[in-house]
Length: 223
Image (tube, rainbow, N blue to C red; front, side):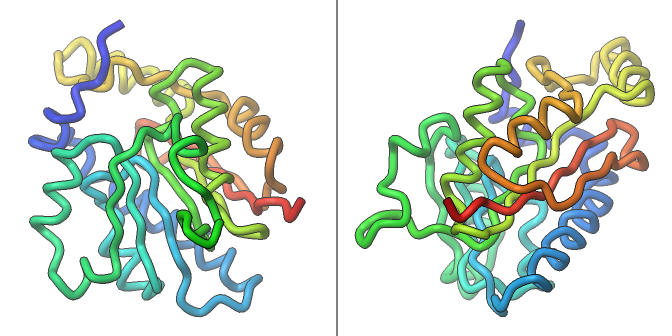
């Protein structure tokens, strides 16, 4: 199976992405705001995994005023594009880290005095489905490794509804499908991975974006 060419994607994003971004962003913010209502955090620290040239940054930054927004991705081209488009004042509250999601736990001293500080919110959109089942579980676990105890973890990934299957089939026939290694995930697989380290708070299937996405929010267990 061919791998997704992420350099190509960041140079010319998939045409449907502009339409789906606002819908996904609205659902993300709903989950984040729901989670923050249950905490005393006013200015959260947020980590986005796999968001090199994040299409959610502006909406989240404007709505939640994070103390720190961290992006972790191993595509330097996408990280550079983010640096070029974001203003200096916002970049001062942003940390960009080049790292593979599957190597996060080994790459950093997480939560230690001299290590990478844990976040109030950790999320990804369209990331964990690009791996084998074993790697997908490891990628989900990486989210929890980066979250504070009691912190919110949100994972969103395509799920193989009939609508998704038809839309993907048509995109592949038209020769415009670029996510060759995308493995749409059944909700039970995602829930199973999230429940290993967290307590699931809410989940849904996002239908209006056509390439249907499952979105799950969970709180990291304290122990």
